[in-house]
Image (cartoon, rainbow, N blue to C red; front, side, top):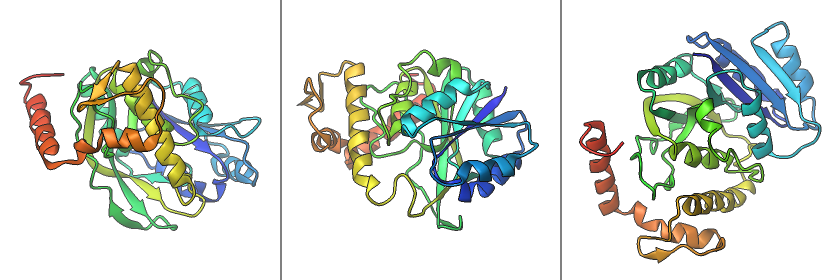
Length: 282
């Protein structure tokens, strides 16, 4: 089973060495790495080409102009030759056994279409700070699951052929395109949690989810949720109507606020346990 490690770059060449070294250190060896640069304005392409020089497992492409991560990640999946795809940002890294653990889960159950694990928040130098403790197994087959609060987070691996049966990543999303992907894959089969902290997320001023982008991420995430609600033909959730047009992020998150409550969380845990025991559901 070949894995395509997909890397969308924009002005992050200065961090790429750590990413590269983490990829080549994988204990699982049947992989390729595909890099697509989104019209970087710095010397990223030159840096990356120098780092991967002579390593035939890496391919790098250049997009003619900057169009955003939604476009670039969608194109990366098209370029992938592997059966399994995963995204690793060029300023982040993964642990040596990361890919192997995900492949094991996917090989064990053909009905699992996406696996996810736990990330480690790191500083500018990739020094670990704290694990993302909210990552966990999610209930499968729930038409009101919208990863809110966030439980599915990198590292995420998914089956390319299943992805191709979806509407694919919405290229308009310049942030939260990952959530769009997760929802569409979730609707196609089982999601499985890999109980491991194997993605090293680097926090730095230029990160796409940092600073001014946080509010944009909030809005795009809400749009992803709304599109999923409509795709799943939800007319109302928890007694609150789903409008015919996008009502703005505040209303979307108000609809889902009940999912933060203790009563809901207890019911969710019971459902997950029942699914793991094969008592009901997918």
